[in-house]
Image (cartoon, rainbow, N blue to C red; front, side, top):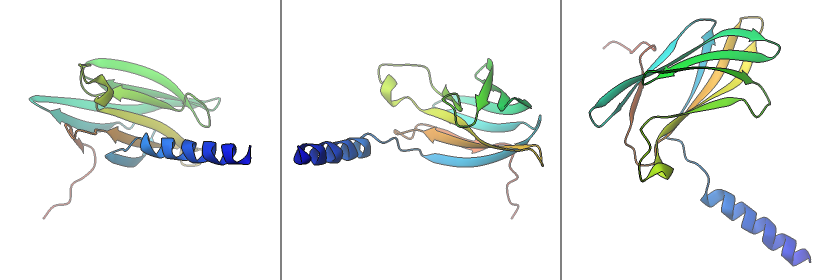
Length: 142
């Protein structure tokens, strides 16, 4: 019985390692209320804008507004909850839908003193089809 549990533990670890999601980009973003963060998403001949901001923090819920490709949405995200993040697919579904590039926007912290929300943004793009860059961060001048 002990060998079975050892095998099961080893199998679980290997399975988790083999199927772990690898993100091309992981970025931490700190935003004040109503400040918008924008990103340019380019693939093939398409250029699209992904943007988001937050408008209200009440009862441990953060109201986040986001838009991508003419689709506007509003979500309420919570810390330490199953509804902590949103997923946005960057390309239309196709035959290879399992390899579709997507963004995950995760709410990780709210600082009541500074009224700032902290997010983590993850880009999954296994085939490296997407060019993804911030439009709101200042680029250093030469």
